[in-house]
Structures are given as structure tokens and as C-alpha cells.
Length: 447
Ligand code: UDX
Image 1 (cartoon, rainbow, N blue to C red):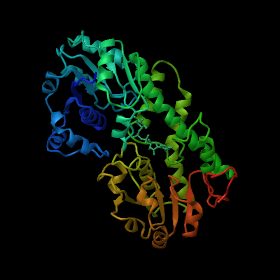
Image 2: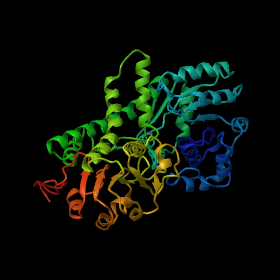
Image 3: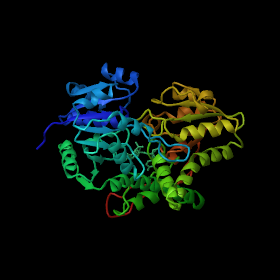
Image 4: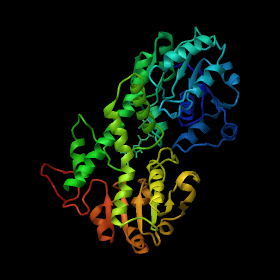
């Protein structure tokens, strides 16, 4: 039918802004509400407070269907559908902090005209039932509840939203299910309807399994280092098994970001709270904690100690294409380097000015040559394209000792050796017998 709806989105972060912009793009009228005045002011004046490809253009293109407000009542007044997209940061116990969700439900008090309240924020399984109870208390007993988890990755959120692998809608109410399916009319992807608890579980399961694939690959990489095998060959050939797939098999410094670390800990906490030890997931988390520490240890061994050494840390964000520093392995690396007595210089094309934790005493450089001059060692922590294209032979001559730890397996070992580096990477021999290639015909090739 493709009718247009009035949507109120609570939370103007990565999830809420992208969802709001995309709903407007689909033709709906959207009011986005946030509690941060600076953020709402910026949005009202046409600025985009986060970096996400295509988002700025989409907000501008649909500006007549988009409003931004600090006022919850204004957002809810004409709304038919409410989307809760506030953040749920982890608490000390590893449980998710749901206080921002409760604040939104509180702000909806008495809004019995609503057709559905939908939560997109990632929440522990069972939260839907608690929200249902809170809604009943807030005079919303006739308003249906739905869970619509988000699977978009940062740096490609708009694209992922408009072309998802699947749309998951969890609700006990058929009318609400139909309404939410209609809201997504125009999004290219299959819609799966299920109960609320299952929808909540899908999100945590997908992220935990992806995290598992990364940690598993990192353990195999460690075994490659011990045996002389090359992780590039191993993952390429393994990933060609269609049952496994090639994705999320890059060995490196482990996963960071706003989702994987938080969601894997949340799922483990969920298990623990129900009296069950999720041992596999505990191992996944432990392996991930180890990766950046192992990198520093290997650099320390190569340099015979880190005390007084100057180390260039190349890349700070948790992955390229974003300005997000949340749970970035670089922070652990900077902290460990300083604990060992090293001086840290850092470079990143997009990270914001950081002054907390180890970054307070790290020296931020504007260019790669500045970062590398007279350094005793360097670590690549984020696979920025700028690093792939850098003039490595020139940079080698600027360093005190050209020791380079490539934590993202971005560069080619034998090429880096030719440039004069003592080159370390994750799970690859320093001088491989043969570079990993894909055969172009039936004859196996080495080239
Ligand atoms: C992720 C999920 O992909 C997304 O579906 C979910 O909704 C939110 O979490 P995001 O955190 O934006 O998205 O980043 P992603 O690109 O998935 O990478 C996560 C981390 O894993 C990064 O630190 C990345 O460097 C690391 N990673 C990824 C690896 O170390 N190896 C890989 O093979 C893939």
C-alpha cells in the first residue's frame, strides 16, 4: 500500500539519525528527538554531528519531512509510530544500562494514540517484556510493542539500512507487524516476523557469532605464527567453503567498536545471570582482549624492551571510514606502550581530538613523516587506505630503527622487507615462500 506515516525517533545517534533519515527518504514524516541541545541545534542548522557516508545528503534531500526537537511531547503529539534508538551502554556488571529507555517510556506517558512503540536499541533478551510492563504502567496498555533490531555497520549504515540482508520485526500484535512492514516498504530485503524475545536474541546472536569468527581466526593466526603457516592462505581457502563464507576472517588486533565488545559481554552476562556459563563466548572475549596486548609484547621483544623508546601508532579509530574511537584496540595499545615506558606518537585522519586515558600523554601528529621521524618502532592499528598508499621506503629511512608491526595485515611482507623494514604482522611469516593469490584458471598458480 505504501502509505506515509508519522514517526517519532528518540535518539539522534548513529542508529536514530540513520533510521530517521532513511524513513524520511521512504516518504514518511519524521521527528527526531534528542536530549542534547548542541546536537539538536546542529541538526536544525543543517550540520551532521556524526560521519556516515550519504547521511548528510539524505538529511538535506528530505529536510521538508524531517524535524529535530528537544521536546518529547512535540515529537509524540502527531506520531503514529515511536522508534526508540537511545544508547544502552554497559554497566560495571556487564549488563546493559537501560535508563535511557526507561526515560523515553516515561516521556510517552498517556500517549494512547500511538499505533506502536518500537525499540531499535540493542537490549538484553527479555527487555521487551519489561518495557511492555512499563508501558502498561504509563497508561499505554492498548499500544502494541515491537522490537526491530538494527544490523547496520558503521561507515555503511545508510546503504545497510536501505539494502539489509533481512528486516527483523518481533511483536505479538498483527496490526503493529503490518504497520511496521508497511513503514519499510521500499527497503530492499526480506522481512521476518517473530516474537519479541526471538527478535532480541537474533541481534545478540548475530554479533556474538561474528565476534566468534574474528577471535577464532585470530587464534588460528597465532597457530600460524607457531607453525610457519600463512593466515592469508589459510583464511582465503577456508572462506571459499560456501558454508563458512569469506567475511570476518581478517586476523588482526581484534574487534572494537560500539557493538561487538558490548554485545558479546551482554550476551555472556545474560547467560551468567540465568546461571549458565557461556564458555565459548568467554573464550571469544578473552582472545579479543589478548590481541592488542600480544602485539605490544611482540614489539617489545623485537626492540629488547620499550622503556624510553618512541613508538609511532598509526591509526586510532576502531576501523577505517569512521571517526569512532569506542573500544578501539589502539587505546589498549597506547596504554600498554606507556605502561612499558614508551613515548607514543599517534596519527589518524579522522579521530577526534582525544584527551582521556593514554591519549592525554600521546603526541598527535598531523602527517605520517612527522609521526615516523626518529621513531624506534611503529604499529598499524587501523587499516586506513592512506596507510596502504604511503611511501613506505621513504618512511623507513626516517625511522631510528625500522621496526613495523602491521596489526591489520595491510601490507605485503616481502615488499616491506625490500623497503628495509623488520616487518611483523599477524599470522603471516615475515618472508612468505609465496604470496597468497587466487588461481585464475584450473591450474593452481603461485605468483
Ligand atoms: C558491527 C556489525 O557488523 C553490525 O551488524 C552491528 O549492527 C554493529 O556491529 P561495526 O561495529 O560498525 O558493525 O563494525 P564492523 O565493520 O562489523 O567491524 C567490527 C570490528 O571487527 C572492527 O573493529 C573490525 O576491525 C573488526 N574486524 C572485522 C576484524 O578484526 N576482522 C574482520 O574480519 C572483520
